[in-house]
Structures are given as C-alpha cells and as structure tokens.
Length: 286
Ligand code: ATP
Image 1 (cartoon, rainbow, N blue to C red):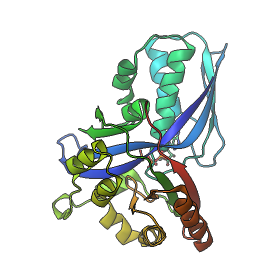
Image 2 (image 1 turned 180 degrees about the vertical axis):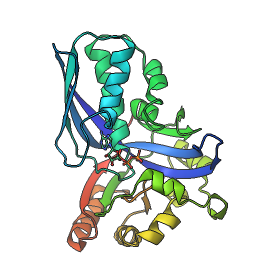
Image 3 (image 1 turned 180 degrees about the horizontal axis):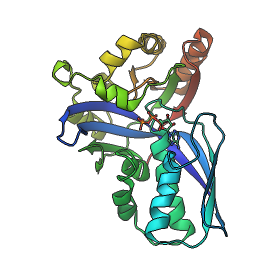
Image 4 (image 1 turned 90 degrees about the vertical axis):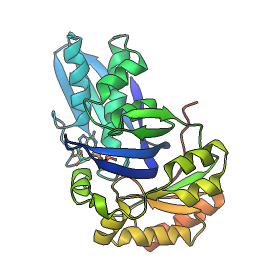
C-alpha cells in the first residue's frame, strides 16, 4: 500500500499562553500543500515493525513518529504478524512543515486500512493526538483553524486559488527550542486570525495575505537573518506575502499567478539563500 503524507504551512500562527502542563495554547490557520513524503506499507509474517528511511540522521526505531504510529494501533488491536514500512522523505526535516507528524498520520490511515481495523477518521484523530499535537490535523488536511494545543480543529472553506513557493534555508530549527525561547509577554503583534477566516470565506486573497502573521518570526529571524532575506526576495519578486511556516526556518510565499511564482523561484535558486526551493499549490480536502 502506497500513501502520500502531505506537508502543511501555517497561514496564521498565534500563541495565546502556556498551560499548566507545559503545552502552549495556540490559534493557527493550517493549510495542506502539495508537497509530500511517500510511505510504502506491507504486511509481513514475522511480528514487529521494520522501518527504513531514505534520509540520513532520521532514526528508524521507536523515536520515529511512523514507528510510534504503527505501534500504537498494532498494540491496541493486537495485530498478528508485522509490517515493513519504507519512508521516502521529500518534505524538509525540522522545517516547520509537520513532516514527521504527516508521516505519522499517513501511517495511522495505512495501518487502519491494511489490517481492516474499521476506525473512522474521528477515531483515528482521537488516537493521533497521543503522537503529536499536529497529527490529528495531518489526518484531516485542507484548510482549518487549529486551537487548543493544535488538536481542536474546525474546517474552513478552501482558500482562494493561489500558488505557494517554498524556500528552506540550510538550517534546522527545533520546534521545542523555538517554544522555549519564546517570550510570551513580549509578543507585540498578534495576527488577526478571525479576520483571516472572514477573508478566506469571502474569497479575498489580498485581504487574507495582508493579515498573515506568525508570532515565532521575530525571535527566530533574530537568530537566523537569512529567513528575512528569503522573505524580502519573494516579496520583491511578486509574492503577495511571504512568511515563515511554524517555528521555521521554512519560508513560503503566496502568489496569485504561476508565472510570477516560477519567476521568483528561479531568482531564489540563483541567490543560493535557500537549500530547498519548491513551487506548488495548496491541497483542498474536497
Ligand atoms: P513541525 O512542523 O510539526 O514542527 P518539523 O518540520 O519541525 O515539524 P519534523 O521534520 O517533523 O519537524 O521532525 C523533527 C525531528 O523529529 C527530526 O529531528 C527527526 O529526527 C525526528 N523525526 C521523527 N520521526 C520523523 C519522521 N518520520 N520524519 C522526519 N523526522 C522525524
């Protein structure tokens, strides 16, 4: 069985506070994009999970979210036999694009189908949050408001037609470190998430992009100025807006035409500011 695990960007990312259990209360507009890892899942007779990944430094044992997801369902349902999983990564790692979370989501969907466990999407999402706050969203996909720690999801109408340019510099940012270095009382500009939802519902791409914001940006850009350079390059070459996704360092630019995006992608590649440059579109749930 072959599955695609799609990446996400955050069109808006706000943090409201820190809970007593250490998690942060967030308000984010999530958007799936057409950039994906590929998973190949097969049954095997011998029990256990054999995972291989086409990417150095990513663990293939219980530290991998794919392994965790497979184990969660296989243990709960006492599945006989085992699975062999081959993961091909295309989504940049530690990049703010939920690569690992999306791989875990695809694994839950795949194991459910392969062993005919009969779980509904809702039931899979309830289990997904045990693996990570973004995993339920990666099962749902599309455009959504994520609240709580990211697991309370409300679907939003799809965004107006647009083109998304991804530019990831050759640095990695740990999500945990980004949260730890965040000064909550120092956040000056909270993005207008409700206004963005209105704009999306009205099909107003200009309005939506004008309101985009990510409270992680000032702190992370302070440490890695190349992120600002990529944003500036995209915005001076046709992007309606360019912003960092999640806790970075990936930057995405929103364009209203493919020609403009392709032209900006060429210039970004020539600049050598970004290690990964990829032009794509959003993915809609329906
Ligand atoms: P998010 O947007 O959710 O913050 P991210 O892009 O910052 O995600 P990931 O690429 O998902 O981060 O993974 C970060 C770390 O998790 C890596 O250092 C990696 O070792 C570990 N990891 C575990 N499972 C996976 C996986 N399936 N794919 C990638 N990384 C994984």
